[in-house]
Length: 403
Image (cartoon, rainbow, N blue to C red):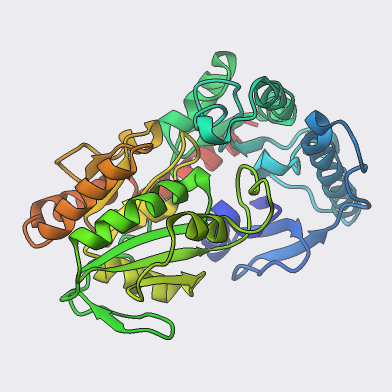
């Protein structure tokens, strides 16, 4: 079988699926932007948009033009592959940046599977959720315009899948029958409890399970992942738990939402707001994956906060590592965490409520083995990599057989 993957940031959500198919002897070609890693056994083909988004274009259309430019660049690479004789049996892609827009115009007979990760709505999800950073009606109108490429993508797809039920539910009802729910999968063998784990804080102490450690992880430190709520809760947590270390992992770039009005990074903005923090608060920046796993393993309490948006792998990996997770009581989290059973829930917008709950969790960190075990079992039973890969492969073979 010949399989074409498309994702602007190879391997993206296909970091397990693409090499797994290659290991089974299938020919796997991965189209991605320049400078990305090459999964084992996979042939990587790079693309590059021929220009940037038009300066001063209407702001509602900037994301759409970027999607068209990416889709056009991928189409040109696809036409070149077709001239070389490559004919995929199936095409799989994340349409979030426009790459899949024109694939069906290149290979009209090849089925297309779309990883439908998110659909932007003006109400009910991320837009308008946080009044502190709301841009008013303009954000609602922008969301509708931004979803144009996503609508074209789901229309073109033969089959689609979303990682969670909530993410599926963001798509228009007319297309939901086309969307299956299959998570990317969590490697529960790799990400597992280790009572002997150690985490070396960069330029700081060595932490173990014997220490009192509150952890927070995000790709970038920003409001979409509740960084502002964490920071506002910190002074009271630190006052109530004088021996606690707080390890905050994440970069200063922007993944989602908007930058601070006056520039700079959200970390700088929030540090200026809350004032000086003691040396037991550790901002690590981004860290290697192996170190990140060790951090989850030594964590006494892991705090995960999010807007109603794409659910992070990090929360599920924390649960897989047997961490005691405090998650925001927002829709994506509620699909996974049952309060008091496999974690605790905290109010996203209430820093004092977060502080009180986190302080109690730290105090009771040695009394919650049942919650830690239930958290890991949740991931093993619902999100284990082997099971998710098997479902993804079954979907692919079903689509290929019916083409």
